Structure formats: C-alpha cells, structure tokens
Length: 182
Image: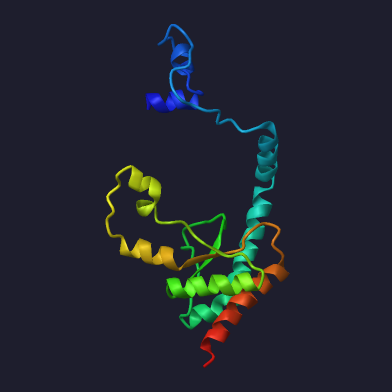
C-alpha cells in the first residue's frame, strides 16, 4: 500500500511528507502522473453531463440488435446478452455467443468482408500473459475458457445509427443463412 502511494505520487514521498512522516519531499521510487489533462477532463465533463442521453441511446442500440437477432437465438444458433430484472446496465457492449471458436472466427471474417469490425473479447484473466508473469496458477476454468472463445462483440457506440445496426444485424443473419445452405 505504501509503495502504491509513492507510485501514484510520481515516485515521491509527498504524501508521507505532508503527513509529517518524512522530513523531506523527495523522489524515492518509480512513479508517474496519473492526472488526466484539462482536455480529457473537459471531455469527461461533457460525457457526464450527457450520461443519461448516452446510456439511453446505447440501450436503444442493444434493444435493436436483440430484436433483429432474436430469431437466431430462438433457434439456438447464438446466445444474446440478458440482464436480470433486478439489475441495470450501461450497455457498454453488445455481444453474441457463437457455437464455438471456429464459428466465431468465420463470423468475424464474414463481417469483415462486409466492412464491419466485430472483435472477440478479452483473454480470460487467469491465462493472460501478465497473470502468468505473476505466477497465477493456470487452473482449468472450462466455462470461462468456453465463453471467451465464443464471445463476439458487435459494433457499439453512441453515434451508431439505426441503419448501421440494421446492416450489422443483416450481415450476422446472412452468415447463418449462408451456413445453412447445403
């Protein structure tokens, strides 16, 4: 905890000095400035002032995706996100769960050919290079590994138009139509 404080304080003992725990304010370790710039702060203020509007639009996008892709989910071809009744979300992403890694890879390629950038999610934390460097045991987490290999994030941002959503959904639907052809 003490080292984290020093790193946060740009590698100095400033906090200890201000508390009277050190007689000099000096550089004692590595550190950096984690303060955001004025420009980023102004951008953040604008985001916070419009948070409800942004979240509402993102919810609309998620609802559109869910409605358009529901036929695939109903047939068991994909799984869609669900938010339990007692929970809320900021709709930071919309994803589909494909049947397996091969299908997800093929769907990404199909969408790329249509000019749509869809990406897979993160490597499971327990198997990430940093976790390995820390000696995190490489336990088998089959559900985590399975979901990670199948999760595909569709485009999601505030300015995504209804037409854009329809194009993405149509491309996903088109992939499964093509896949079903003999």
